[in-house]
Image (cartoon, helix red, strand yellow):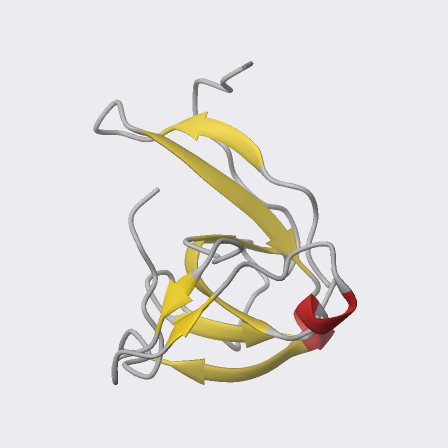
Length: 113
C-alpha cells in the first residue's frame, strides 16, 4: 500500500475528513449493524471528522464531525500523520455537508482503523 508522506493542505474551501465508517458498526445502545458497503442498503450518509480545511472554508473547523450525503466523498488515500500513524483521508464536497457537530456523535460507534 502506498502511503503519502509530508504536509497535505486542501485548497480553496475543500474539506478533508478521516474516521469515516464503512465496516460493521455497533451503536451506542449495543445494536450490531453489519457492513453494507457496496450494497443498496449501504447507500446512506456518513459521519466523518474534519482533518484539514482550505483557507476559504468558513462553515466547519478542524476537529468537527460532519454528516455527508452518500457518495459525496473521494476514495480514501493513506497518509502518515504527525505522530507517524497511518490514517485514511477523503475529500468531501462542501455543498454535501448536511450537519456539523463539535463533538463525536454518540449514536454510532466509530472504531479506530
